[in-house]
Length: 92
Image 1 (tube, helix red, strand yellow):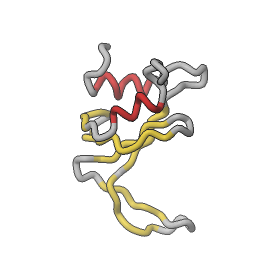
Image 2 (cartoon, helix red, strand yellow; image 1 turned 135 degrees about the vertical axis):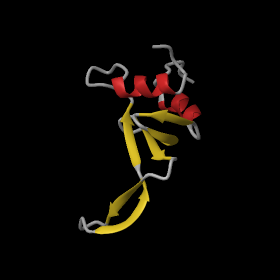
Image 3 (spheres, one colour; image 1 turned 90 degrees about the horizontal axis):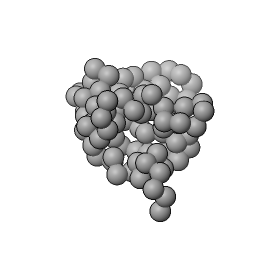
Image 4 (cartoon, one colour; image 1 turned 120 degrees about the horizontal axis):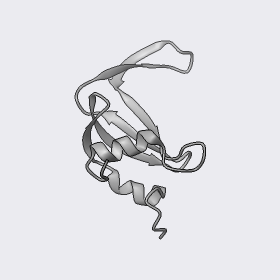
């Protein structure tokens, strides 16, 4: 396995992690290899309207947030670094 800390396989160790970040309590629910991207779900009851395929309001679901792992230059994305810092996994 790669030792790259930004490798999606290593980032999966974050699954289930709960943290306060960007004004909300979040839970890491998925790491997508596309992007790659870390997917967060609001763990504080915050809800969002989920539209159907036609853009019509369908129902309220927990708010979700996607955090890119890499920036345009292939380095760690600033939002991911903020998230890891909020989780106490890296130092500022």
